[in-house]
Length: 463
Image 1 (cartoon, rainbow, N blue to C red):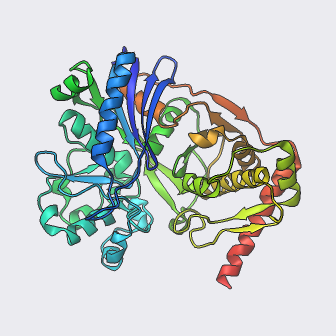
Image 2: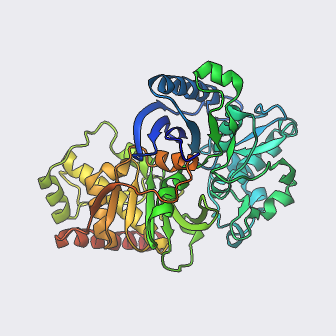
Image 3: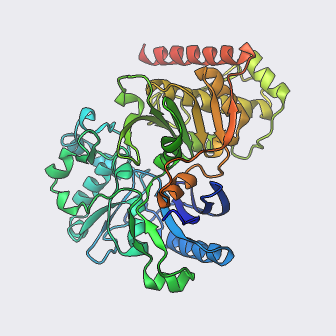
């Protein structure tokens, strides 16, 4: 297995689906295919277009393999998503989009049976963000179809099943605010037994398990070697964390950026998590609990910068810092550390586009810093994914935490970690520029002003 070098990583994000070609020797992405991943808003409810994704995956595997031989396939996907399949492996219901509000209609009934935060490390979240709530709603709303289910699969393992014919589950997705997993006992939660779902739970296997070779028909379709192995796969934020678990010395934290910005602390300060502020306990690829916090930062960035060029000057930055142009939370409500506060601009009169971009970047960094505080993060912070390329975000994150920030060079923060499932190497040195907190006190002053304004905003809501 250690001889494998070129890994195709299927990476299904909430906004984009990708297939990355990763070189394990250089720990770099040699090639990347991408498509938009929009839900189908049709009956019976908004759902993921798995057939369009499947065609994209197979076409990407075929195209990449023509350019250079693929040695193995690994999989990573967004969380809060699962599939109900029958004995033949076919879906009995479409894969529900977690932003659909249908599960909220049974919130009272679900809340009466869901396990407490102390058992699962799962906060109660709206919409379908608790996977247990999705499955509960599907069972109550579509009893005939649900009765045909032979297995509940986490989303990465649904794709593994289609590739190999082997059904499995895995802890990083089970432990991603699902209500289905107890991270302290490493077993299913009381909800699973209360609803008699345990028999639907196929065996839990390590993320690095080789489930099998690709199915013969897929070898023909893609041109891959029929013995190409497929690994079990994992949740995307935990894929970003894995290289650091293998190489970094605690304490440290990792911020995985995409549609969601997920902060994870390893070896940090002991702190009581606040379930009301979207903190949670993730389970990493090695099976250990990880204090985590999140907000929908990528979605907020897209909303805030729509039709606006990502251009700024040092003068723009200086003006924002001096005038204390502040964006207060939250642009995307219902989740994150300030779920009930409404976004407000302060000192923004006459703001130019470059200044607006700088203030947005600072806002996202300060929201991330808040998440890190909530989970007791300590030591350096590594930023994975798109935000690592935003110098303003990285600089303000360093200023507001008072700790170094490493901006990962990987184009897709999840792909390297997912590719590492196919190797037995014990360490994986990541690459990236290390930024210390800015020497200019104006950056820290800005962070302090933002925190004071947010506190005042929250007090206004409670008055």
